[in-house]
Image 1: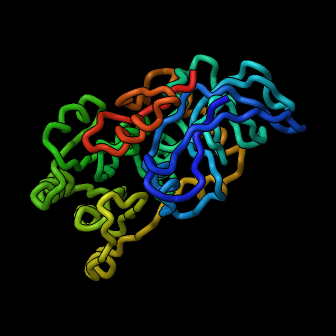
Image 2: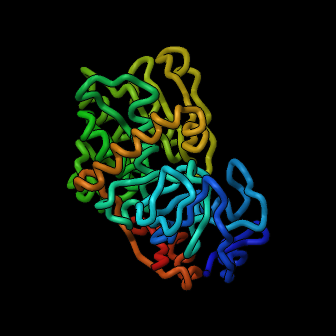
Length: 324
């Protein structure tokens, strides 16, 4: 079998290699999975570079999410042929993998496997931020930056399903129509003029929740748009610029600042609760209510081309590795 690996941290194209390996025999409580597809996420690149929040032990097979089919099981929870995603651990850039059954989650058999491969990270992040920081009444406004990102597009779709309205900030005009077609209520350029317009539109009910994936001045514009006692959640730092919060937002608007790290959030929840959320998200995918764009597809054997494309700007969705 073929899998990707890296022996040291560094530039992804320099350190990622392919190697043959022989799958080992299962022990009790484990499953063997034939991987079907796995995306290349920004977090995957950060892991490989060694600048993520945690560092894996080396050598390491990358891939924080993916979907596959159970080939063999020594767990009562799974049978041969079950479709699964992985909610812990992983190392999905491989043709086959063996893992503890508790790291996997069975999904409906009719779930499209390319969409299932992208279920773990973006949809759960969007759902969690929309529901776990504020109890928002129907028709509440939520504002976000980087609205065309993977999480951003999931926020738009899930917010619509939850009866919430979204204000979406982007950097380029050509992104507006696509996000409106996806269900966005308002799409604006990420600048000060747009925030003035947001205040006019929402003056009777300002946003109570802001979702920040950028940092820097963009994050401050979200704070400016929030109403009193609003909640500001940071889950990314695309600009690589820190937050320097003006005192007025903390004193006079009394906004709350939070961070969100999906992996740690999962660890803090009851397993049954997390599994229930994933089942709801999977069902929405089956029904076509959540769709994530795929920019391009590459076989695992062409991982170098896939890594190059995944790190280029102006992609239209995820880069997907296909194992079979």
